[in-house]
Image (cartoon, rainbow, N blue to C red):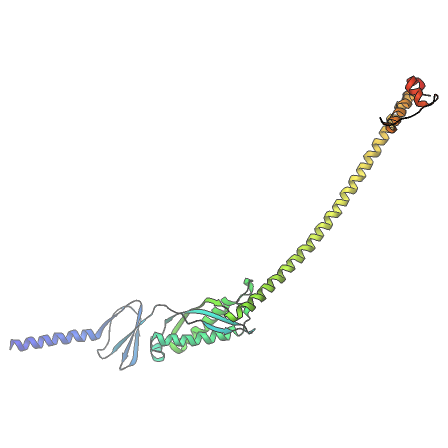
Length: 295
């Protein structure tokens, strides 16, 4: 009798434990819990902690943290018919577990849907832009940031409505040209840089000519002023010399005449000059008589 009671008690305890195991469950801060009944979603639990459900109900758990999807590089065509290879990434998370389960079911299928949405969005956006809007030396011309912002918004609305997925960010990791297009693009870029360099050289040469013309004009003005001042000073000096000569001549005309005559002879005669003087020569009289020979 006691053995039978122990068996019943043990069965009751085991049943109670099984009932508690099937009824109570916990959720973490990093996950959603979707309660299903016979495969049909019943409710979503978003709060962390201990919760209850009916034993015949099941739990599907989903990570609510951000995920990063890295699609394979894809080639796109710009508006000006240039091929472009883009490696992008998508940051996403599950926003609506109920819709997520009904539409895609798992992360792999979700990323396949995201790939289609992002690829079609990039294709449409790049088809409305020229290559220079994505690859340019001028920051003002690059429109990649606004393109990605619009693409993120559009992809988020579409993915949330269809699959219960929140698209947080769409970015470009790498953007490059196909091998067959690189040389032609580089040649065009070099031609553009050479055109700009020639323009800078032409502008510099024009400025140099203006500077040289101004410098020549200023030089002529300076030389003209200097010549004017020099002539003025020379005229004043000649006038002063004439005045001094006049004063000296007026004091002793004979001596002044003697000095001037000697200075003139000194100019025309040197140690290689041979002259023959007659007896009435003024020079001979000066040499023999000195000041007395001057008339």
